[in-house]
Image 1 (cartoon, rainbow, N blue to C red):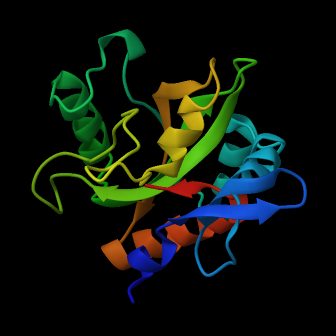
Image 2: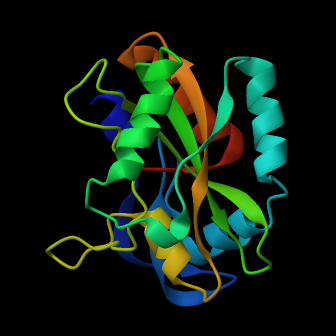
Length: 194
């Protein structure tokens, strides 16, 4: 089982929870035990991490980490390659970045920017196409199963939304290093994978 597969979350239909009662969604991340989705979300939303605290802690460990401007949220169209992806790719290439790990953020219901997803990607220097960073809201697959827990989390409460203009980028020397950084980010900040 590869690292990427190991970190994919999975869902079971339900679990009985002392706090939330019977029939709750079950969520499992990494090698951990299955837990009540509602308990997981209660803990996640109460974390004190913000864009600034994550940026500072990441830069202490990875000094080349940098916050990049991604796009004007009003002009972003998911799934359509526009000048936004090209410009972001160009910014990274101009800084000699091939493989990288990133943290994308969300606005909570109080409009504070908080970390949500850790992922890895590459520029057209190392792979075909542009970085595969997106801000979709679709969280179910064709079988109507939840496969994107971060997107599901955003849909659960009015007022939560992707922060589409800021992305924290950590350059990596190769894809394997990017996976390692992604793993650290997910564990350090309890982030969702993509």
